[in-house]
Image (cartoon, one colour):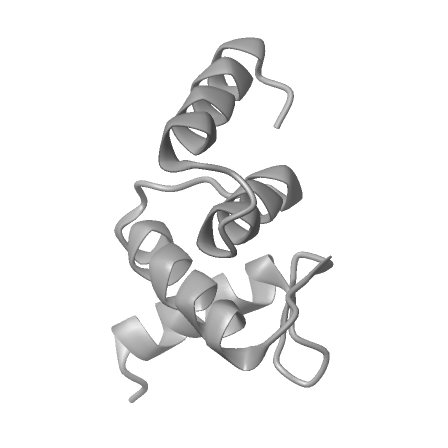
Length: 88
């Protein structure tokens, strides 16, 4: 019998379209393995628990925050605005 958490993680990985060879998540490219792995580790737990509904735009914002392109305040602002507009 297969382990339920393993099945759930496999489903999450498939939904996210994680491509470790090309360092992309939902088609969003990452410049290096470290940033890619950080994003994967940040997204998986929330999805497995059912608390996170990622989109390519949210993954892109997360990547930009991890890379220092946008500040934490800007990241939160963009997520909050996006949540209200329901565009991402």
